[in-house]
Length: 225
Image (tube, rainbow, N blue to C red):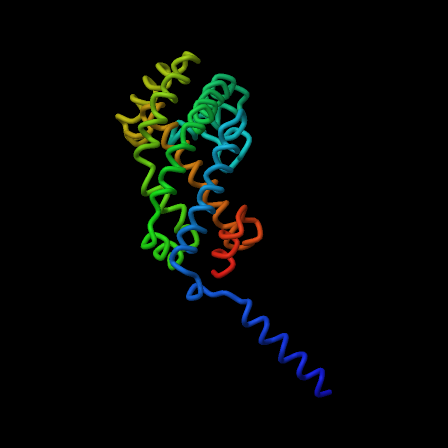
Protein backbone atom coordinates (compact mmCIF):
# COMPACT_ATOMS: atom_id res chain seq x y z
CA UNK A 1 0.00 0.00 0.00
CA UNK A 2 2.84 2.36 0.84
CA UNK A 3 4.50 1.58 -2.49
CA UNK A 4 1.28 2.29 -4.37
CA UNK A 5 0.82 5.57 -2.52
CA UNK A 6 4.41 6.57 -3.24
CA UNK A 7 3.96 5.69 -6.91
CA UNK A 8 0.81 7.81 -7.19
CA UNK A 9 2.50 10.74 -5.49
CA UNK A 10 5.46 10.40 -7.84
CA UNK A 11 3.21 10.36 -10.91
CA UNK A 12 1.36 13.47 -9.69
CA UNK A 13 4.61 15.32 -9.12
CA UNK A 14 5.86 14.31 -12.57
CA UNK A 15 2.67 15.53 -14.20
CA UNK A 16 2.93 18.87 -12.43
CA UNK A 17 6.52 19.18 -13.52
CA UNK A 18 5.62 18.52 -17.15
CA UNK A 19 2.55 20.76 -17.28
CA UNK A 20 3.14 24.20 -18.76
CA UNK A 21 1.25 27.39 -18.14
CA UNK A 22 1.55 30.74 -19.88
CA UNK A 23 3.70 31.94 -16.99
CA UNK A 24 6.22 29.19 -17.76
CA UNK A 25 6.73 30.32 -21.35
CA UNK A 26 9.63 32.58 -22.15
CA UNK A 27 8.84 35.69 -24.14
CA UNK A 28 10.98 34.33 -26.97
CA UNK A 29 9.05 31.04 -27.05
CA UNK A 30 5.67 32.76 -26.93
CA UNK A 31 6.47 35.01 -29.90
CA UNK A 32 8.18 32.23 -31.86
CA UNK A 33 5.36 29.77 -31.34
CA UNK A 34 2.75 32.28 -32.44
CA UNK A 35 4.78 33.14 -35.55
CA UNK A 36 4.91 29.44 -36.44
CA UNK A 37 1.17 29.01 -35.88
CA UNK A 38 0.23 32.10 -37.86
CA UNK A 39 2.49 31.07 -40.73
CA UNK A 40 0.82 27.66 -40.75
CA UNK A 41 -2.67 29.20 -40.71
CA UNK A 42 -1.85 31.63 -43.51
CA UNK A 43 -0.38 28.94 -45.74
CA UNK A 44 -3.32 26.59 -45.19
CA UNK A 45 -5.82 29.36 -45.94
CA UNK A 46 -4.08 30.42 -49.14
CA UNK A 47 -3.78 26.82 -50.32
CA UNK A 48 -7.43 26.10 -49.55
CA UNK A 49 -8.92 29.24 -51.10
CA UNK A 50 -6.52 29.91 -53.96
CA UNK A 51 -7.75 27.03 -56.12
CA UNK A 52 -10.81 26.52 -58.35
CA UNK A 53 -13.76 25.99 -56.03
CA UNK A 54 -11.97 27.39 -52.99
CA UNK A 55 -14.78 29.88 -52.40
CA UNK A 56 -17.63 28.54 -54.52
CA UNK A 57 -17.62 25.03 -53.02
CA UNK A 58 -17.71 26.23 -49.40
CA UNK A 59 -21.27 27.28 -48.46
CA UNK A 60 -19.96 29.56 -45.69
CA UNK A 61 -17.54 31.37 -48.00
CA UNK A 62 -19.27 31.34 -51.38
CA UNK A 63 -19.64 34.86 -52.73
CA UNK A 64 -23.17 35.74 -53.78
CA UNK A 65 -24.77 38.94 -54.97
CA UNK A 66 -25.11 41.39 -52.10
CA UNK A 67 -28.07 42.96 -50.35
CA UNK A 68 -31.38 43.12 -52.17
CA UNK A 69 -29.67 41.96 -55.36
CA UNK A 70 -28.98 38.70 -53.58
CA UNK A 71 -32.63 38.33 -52.62
CA UNK A 72 -33.69 38.91 -56.22
CA UNK A 73 -31.05 36.46 -57.43
CA UNK A 74 -32.26 33.72 -55.10
CA UNK A 75 -35.84 34.26 -56.30
CA UNK A 76 -34.71 34.03 -59.93
CA UNK A 77 -32.91 30.76 -59.20
CA UNK A 78 -36.02 29.24 -57.63
CA UNK A 79 -38.04 30.26 -60.68
CA UNK A 80 -35.59 28.61 -63.05
CA UNK A 81 -34.26 31.96 -64.30
CA UNK A 82 -30.91 31.89 -62.56
CA UNK A 83 -28.51 31.01 -65.39
CA UNK A 84 -27.21 34.55 -65.70
CA UNK A 85 -26.97 34.88 -61.92
CA UNK A 86 -25.04 31.61 -61.68
CA UNK A 87 -22.63 32.76 -64.36
CA UNK A 88 -22.03 36.07 -62.61
CA UNK A 89 -21.55 34.50 -59.19
CA UNK A 90 -19.20 31.87 -60.62
CA UNK A 91 -17.04 34.61 -62.09
CA UNK A 92 -17.09 36.52 -58.79
CA UNK A 93 -15.90 33.50 -56.85
CA UNK A 94 -13.25 32.67 -59.42
CA UNK A 95 -11.93 36.23 -59.24
CA UNK A 96 -11.51 35.86 -55.48
CA UNK A 97 -9.75 32.52 -55.92
CA UNK A 98 -7.31 34.08 -58.39
CA UNK A 99 -6.48 36.91 -55.99
CA UNK A 100 -5.85 34.86 -52.84
CA UNK A 101 -2.39 33.46 -53.76
CA UNK A 102 -1.11 37.03 -53.69
CA UNK A 103 -1.79 37.06 -49.96
CA UNK A 104 0.82 34.59 -48.81
CA UNK A 105 3.91 36.79 -49.01
CA UNK A 106 2.17 39.72 -47.32
CA UNK A 107 0.76 37.54 -44.55
CA UNK A 108 4.11 35.91 -43.85
CA UNK A 109 5.75 39.33 -43.75
CA UNK A 110 3.16 40.48 -41.18
CA UNK A 111 3.90 37.36 -39.14
CA UNK A 112 7.60 38.20 -39.09
CA UNK A 113 6.81 41.62 -37.64
CA UNK A 114 5.06 40.13 -34.60
CA UNK A 115 6.73 41.41 -31.42
CA UNK A 116 6.91 40.09 -27.87
CA UNK A 117 4.34 42.69 -26.85
CA UNK A 118 2.05 41.49 -29.66
CA UNK A 119 2.49 37.90 -28.47
CA UNK A 120 1.52 38.81 -24.90
CA UNK A 121 -1.59 40.62 -26.11
CA UNK A 122 -2.60 37.71 -28.37
CA UNK A 123 -2.13 35.07 -25.69
CA UNK A 124 -4.18 37.10 -23.24
CA UNK A 125 -6.81 37.96 -25.83
CA UNK A 126 -9.92 36.33 -27.32
CA UNK A 127 -9.89 32.99 -29.21
CA UNK A 128 -9.26 34.71 -32.55
CA UNK A 129 -6.73 37.24 -31.27
CA UNK A 130 -3.96 35.99 -33.56
CA UNK A 131 -6.22 36.27 -36.61
CA UNK A 132 -7.24 39.77 -35.53
CA UNK A 133 -3.56 40.71 -35.40
CA UNK A 134 -3.03 39.51 -38.98
CA UNK A 135 -6.12 41.33 -40.21
CA UNK A 136 -5.11 44.54 -38.46
CA UNK A 137 -1.56 44.50 -39.80
CA UNK A 138 -2.08 43.26 -43.36
CA UNK A 139 -5.64 43.86 -44.56
CA UNK A 140 -5.02 47.26 -46.16
CA UNK A 141 -2.01 45.98 -48.10
CA UNK A 142 -3.93 42.88 -49.15
CA UNK A 143 -6.83 45.01 -50.38
CA UNK A 144 -4.43 47.02 -52.54
CA UNK A 145 -2.90 43.82 -53.95
CA UNK A 146 -6.22 42.03 -54.52
CA UNK A 147 -8.18 44.79 -56.21
CA UNK A 148 -6.41 44.91 -59.62
CA UNK A 149 -6.41 41.10 -59.87
CA UNK A 150 -10.13 40.95 -59.13
CA UNK A 151 -10.78 43.74 -61.63
CA UNK A 152 -8.84 41.96 -64.37
CA UNK A 153 -10.67 38.69 -63.72
CA UNK A 154 -14.12 40.29 -63.72
CA UNK A 155 -13.36 42.33 -66.83
CA UNK A 156 -12.36 39.18 -68.70
CA UNK A 157 -15.73 37.51 -68.24
CA UNK A 158 -17.61 40.50 -69.63
CA UNK A 159 -20.04 40.81 -66.74
CA UNK A 160 -18.45 43.57 -64.70
CA UNK A 161 -20.07 46.44 -66.58
CA UNK A 162 -23.49 44.84 -66.38
CA UNK A 163 -23.15 44.26 -62.64
CA UNK A 164 -21.77 47.71 -61.89
CA UNK A 165 -24.55 49.43 -63.85
CA UNK A 166 -27.31 47.44 -62.18
CA UNK A 167 -25.78 47.56 -58.69
CA UNK A 168 -25.02 51.28 -58.98
CA UNK A 169 -28.68 52.01 -59.72
CA UNK A 170 -29.77 49.80 -56.83
CA UNK A 171 -27.37 51.57 -54.47
CA UNK A 172 -28.83 54.96 -55.35
CA UNK A 173 -32.17 53.71 -54.03
CA UNK A 174 -30.62 52.24 -50.90
CA UNK A 175 -30.86 48.61 -52.04
CA UNK A 176 -27.27 47.96 -51.03
CA UNK A 177 -24.37 49.92 -49.57
CA UNK A 178 -21.97 51.89 -51.72
CA UNK A 179 -19.09 49.47 -51.08
CA UNK A 180 -21.12 46.67 -52.68
CA UNK A 181 -22.12 48.80 -55.66
CA UNK A 182 -18.80 48.10 -57.38
CA UNK A 183 -18.13 44.47 -58.18
CA UNK A 184 -14.36 44.72 -57.77
CA UNK A 185 -14.60 46.28 -54.32
CA UNK A 186 -17.32 43.91 -53.21
CA UNK A 187 -15.49 40.75 -54.34
CA UNK A 188 -12.23 42.03 -52.85
CA UNK A 189 -13.82 42.59 -49.44
CA UNK A 190 -15.52 39.20 -49.51
CA UNK A 191 -12.25 37.55 -50.52
CA UNK A 192 -10.51 39.18 -47.56
CA UNK A 193 -13.32 38.19 -45.21
CA UNK A 194 -13.07 34.59 -46.39
CA UNK A 195 -9.30 34.52 -46.05
CA UNK A 196 -9.35 35.67 -42.43
CA UNK A 197 -12.29 33.41 -41.67
CA UNK A 198 -10.25 30.37 -42.71
CA UNK A 199 -7.24 31.59 -40.74
CA UNK A 200 -9.52 31.97 -37.70
CA UNK A 201 -10.64 28.37 -38.18
CA UNK A 202 -7.01 27.27 -38.15
CA UNK A 203 -6.36 29.26 -34.99
CA UNK A 204 -9.40 27.70 -33.30
CA UNK A 205 -8.16 24.23 -34.26
CA UNK A 206 -4.73 24.83 -32.75
CA UNK A 207 -6.18 26.25 -29.55
CA UNK A 208 -8.39 23.20 -29.19
CA UNK A 209 -5.81 20.64 -30.36
CA UNK A 210 -2.21 21.89 -29.96
CA UNK A 211 -0.95 18.60 -31.44
CA UNK A 212 -2.23 19.83 -34.82
CA UNK A 213 0.48 22.52 -34.86
CA UNK A 214 3.23 21.99 -37.39
CA UNK A 215 6.16 22.83 -35.09
CA UNK A 216 7.10 21.75 -31.58
CA UNK A 217 7.32 25.38 -30.47
CA UNK A 218 3.76 26.12 -31.61
CA UNK A 219 2.59 22.94 -29.89
CA UNK A 220 4.27 24.15 -26.69
CA UNK A 221 2.69 27.60 -26.83
CA UNK A 222 -0.86 26.47 -27.60
CA UNK A 223 -0.56 23.62 -25.16
CA UNK A 224 -0.01 26.19 -22.43
CA UNK A 225 -3.27 28.02 -23.16
